[in-house]
Length: 78
Image 1 (tube, rainbow, N blue to C red):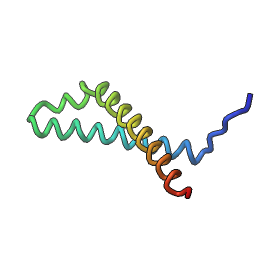
Image 2: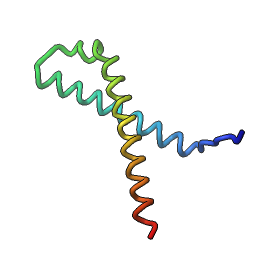
Image 3: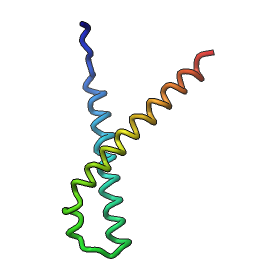
């Protein structure tokens, strides 16, 4: 069986995408706390949901990047 190698650059890029998705989910939580005037303790108590939403955003970004890559390859080939 052939080994699959993932470069360090690719790993760092995916880690940046994951971190940005989790930070986006955290900022959405802060926005909700400010909008609904709830307690700041929800920032910690809702952390498992923030991580789940961040993971969902990451998966969504992987799917969208895959679709863009496929479309880009189809458009570039005459």
